[in-house]
Every structure is written in C-alpha cells, then in structure tokens.
Length: 231
Picture (spheres, rainbow, N blue to C red):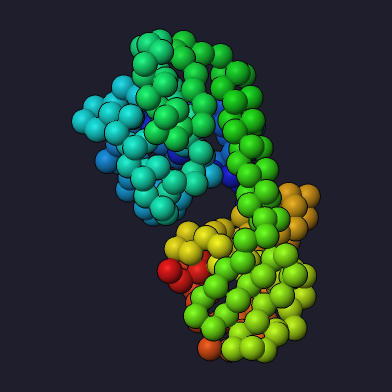
C-alpha cells in the first residue's frame, strides 16, 4: 500500500532531519526542501499529501510560498502545517488566511507535530469524502455525470457503469487537472481500509475508458504516479 508523502520545507538541517526521522518512524514518506524554490520543484515533480512549511526561509519566505500554492488550482488542495519561531500572532493569522491548515511554534515536541500531521490528513480525507457525496453534477460537452442519481449520460445514452467505476469517474472529473495517485483514488472511492494493487486500479480505469468511448481520452495516465482528468 502506497505511503502518504510529506514534504518538509525547512532550511535548518538538524530540524529537517528530526522531522523526517519522526515522519518515517510513523510510516510516512518524507522529502526535504531547504527553500521555497526547491519546494516548488519537488511539488512539481510529485505533489505530496501534506507540507510542513517553515515560515522563515531564505529567499522566498514560507508565507509567499503558501500564497502561491493556495492560489494555484493544481496545488491548492495540499494541506499545509506552518512552523514558526516568531511566535507572532500576525504571522499565524496571515498564514491561516492564505489557506494553511494548522501551525506549530518552535521549539516543538515531535510527538505533538506528528499528532498534528495525522489530524490534518484525517480532516483532508473527510473533506474529500464530503465533496464526493455532494450532489453537484459535472457537465463536459455531451457528457453529464450526476452523483445524485449515480448516472453518467453521454449524448443522451446512459453508460452501464459499476458503482466503483462511477465513483472513480466522478472523483477524477470533479478535479480536472489534478494528478491523483492510485492510492488517493482508492481511498476516496472505496475507503482507506480497502487494499488494492496498482494493477487493480489500472484495470478499472481501462474498463471505464472503454465504456466512455471517445470521452475515455479525458482520463489521462500520469506515468509512475496515477491519473488525471483533462482540463
């Protein structure tokens, strides 16, 4: 089962190593960037499930990086935990107003930070599920995806989709342009306790594309990562 990835954006090597060690001990994958530019490169290569962001960074500070990420439709969904040594209320308020999900002040307890990481990820998963069960339909040209009726209609003809196929299609189509890992697809459509191999997701996508005909091309493969719905 694919582990959740956390990007640690911290210029202090000792602190980044401490955080990374604790993340890995809790079953997460950890990647480190020492500044904002490095963080953007890492996110562009493989979007993480969560970012731990120090506000005091060389060059582009953490507040500016947070602003850029939350203003970008492709990264706005990534939860951010801010880390600050300033202890100033204004910095915390500004970060939260920009869209950060939580904060912790230095010096901090690694146990408390790990608890915050898990709590933020749980909230994000719940948000995804709540978004999924909403009744907002998705219309793409002649294709209508109606979650309230669990129907997909293309050019007036209803597609005979299984429940899992429908959930996968709605999950991807309601997030156009977002790259979704196979693990994220499974977690959002079947629940985190459902174990599946990469091959299983690929087989489901293959069958879904075939049923969608010419619209199957809207589901794009992102090699080595997962899938996205064409914008």
